[in-house]
Image (tube, rainbow, N blue to C red; front, side, top):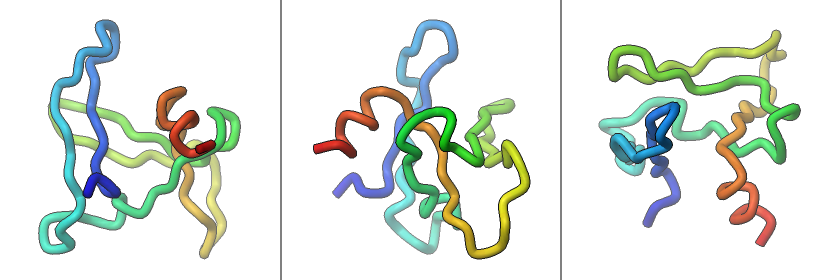
Length: 82
């Protein structure tokens, strides 16, 4: 079950550095519920990797009770469209 998994890739080479698995609530956080945006312009937050730590960063003001959307890239867009 890979519903809460995603790959962290190196910026330039796009090589997979590691895979995060947020399946188990005990070891995960709210970011497991960030949904895939349809394209980069729809995202209201983004993931940033800093010193092997991942942060969720707001790209603009996000009203309370709004869906968190991050652009995961073309491969994810193709999966979501199926």
